[in-house]
Amino acid sequence: MHGFGVDPTGTHFEKNGVVGAKLTGNGARFGENVDPATDKNLEIASVGTGTCSSNAVTINKQAGVITTESLNTAAGAEQAITLTNSVIKATDIVLASAGLGGATNGTPGVASVTVSAGQAIITLSNFHASSAFNGSIKIAFFVLNGA
Image 1 (tube, rainbow, N blue to C red):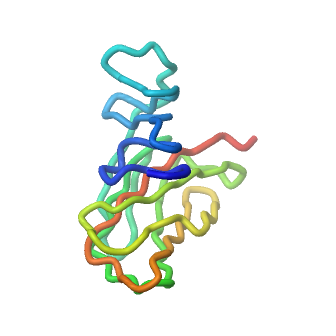
Image 2 (image 1 turned 90 degrees about the vertical axis):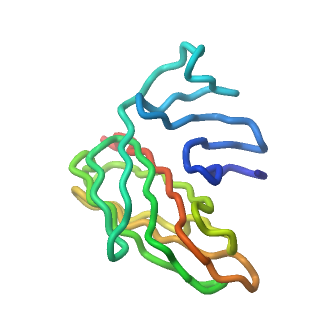
């Protein structure tokens, strides 16, 4: 993986192939080459998971991994995913990154995240020049306290 993004399993944030954060069932850990079995890095929060239905999901955790339903978003097109989350305040910042889940075609990325109290709308883009998505996409998110 080049640049900053999430791996295809939706559990690691990476930059230029170096794992910088790992989302586990026990929490989100940060640091280079994170090994949750042996590291002593700060554990941020428990991680939630959820699968979209009608492009919406509820995960009431500070961090989580969303699995979309099967998408066929065309090359160059976008798809909005609504995350309902009681942790999110209107002043918060929600970081999100996307990767191929069950899909094998397309190039997913997060175009924008619009935050309001209790909700974030994550707009996925398919940056591929010609291939549509052909399955599910994984989105990892983290809620930062904005005020």
